Image 1 (cartoon, helix red, strand yellow):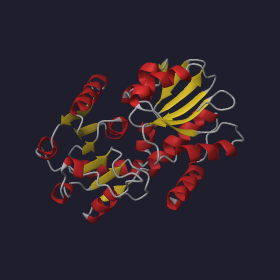
Image 2 (cartoon, one colour):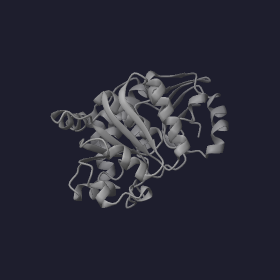
Image 3 (cartoon, rainbow, N blue to C red):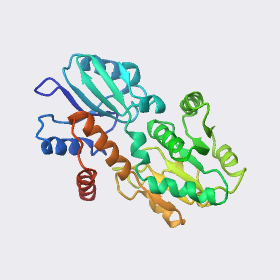
Image 4 (tube, helix red, strand yellow):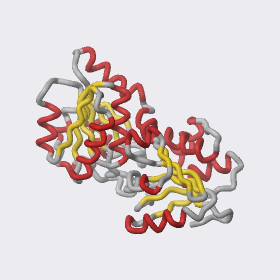
Length: 304
């Protein structure tokens, strides 16, 4: 795990077979003539404290963070950025000598397809209605999506549906406290009927559906992200737009199903590429071009 120069470089999570991050970061390291080698570092939840003890002995740490650790790492960090505080979620750790800093590039990643998000706002403004979204999930991706919509829309209604309701309630409490003056509503739902009632009963807003769960990512690319929540085709037809946080595969099962029902769809490739650019800028102190990152990512995904 520790490289030859005593540093730890890579991505940490519980299951990382799908992750393109190490290959991308190693590609950029070569591009920038750097010596760091990035690995996929799988860590069990109960191993996380011991892992951070090991980090404290390293002179240099560059890590991306993925599920389920984006919130759990916060207590181990000396500093977290404003974006990380907004989302209460960290997806980048940098530092060394026991002094670790946490950042969040997922918010900017989520917002990178700005025309897609703006179109939904404009569609609703034409009818003098607030935009509305149903966000599936309660983890770091769901938090990034929520903060991104706060910034992109400024008003509207965000309804969340998650299987871990206690975790979801904590997320909502965080948003309500941090954005107490926001014009967005934050509404947690335990069951589909609760979500439907909150999302559909007020008006005829043009609605966005967001899959902020890992369901449907490679190698389980055929898994349906809607099935765990009981969403039927009739439910899904209520949404004109669909945003899938999954980037691998490029065109997910969720995107295919929503497109077949007439929705405008977008996947997580833009999100992944933007957060990778920001990660590289922190790690290498050099910013790669998004075109370079996208070419590499799309080539690797198509090969997979």
